Length: 244
Image 1 (cartoon, helix red, strand yellow):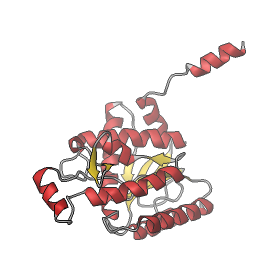
Image 2: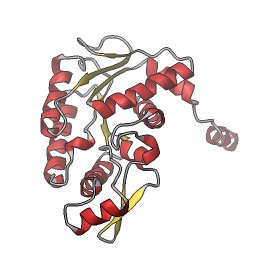
Image 3: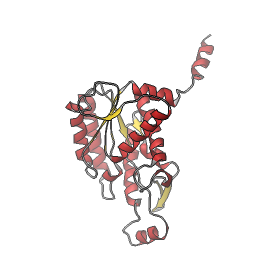
Image 4: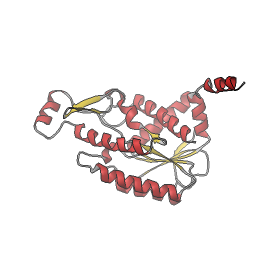
């Protein structure tokens, strides 16, 4: 009898995307972001429409009291520490108040070739820990930092030889280093945007392989196009439903 029960449990089917979207539509989710985060939410909206699920996604104006995804801009690109401070303020008395699940998106623009990865990670970890203590009823998801494409061909080669660096290379190295720290620290509560963006896309720098944004997912090298939005949106749904 026990064996039959174990077999039945093992054979339980994975919920469909429509079922996950339905679960998401019944939760209170808050997302603080800039442009790439908006790309992801646009992808979630398209998926919900395609699967006939009524899912509220709107910019927040006050405390989150009804089910759905409420979002708001946090800080400005290029200033990740300010985004961390804004995220806390939005949860305190803004549109993030009352959320069951909360997420801050740090943009590819927040991590440059000159970023001190260890210092930024330490600041992120400190803020994340403080928020978990302050809001014990909120499940915090951590998003990896998005990537960009890299400059290939003759121009990229020349820029590397001149030491200025091909577009995206040094920046993506730093982003990957930070993402690896985030993956290790928050493995159980992660929205791995960078992994979705990269797939098998890599470039070689100083004898090592590093991930980059797949060109088919973007029209400008950093933001997500229709295909990229849907792929990232699906991963977002999986991550949030997994946290509920």
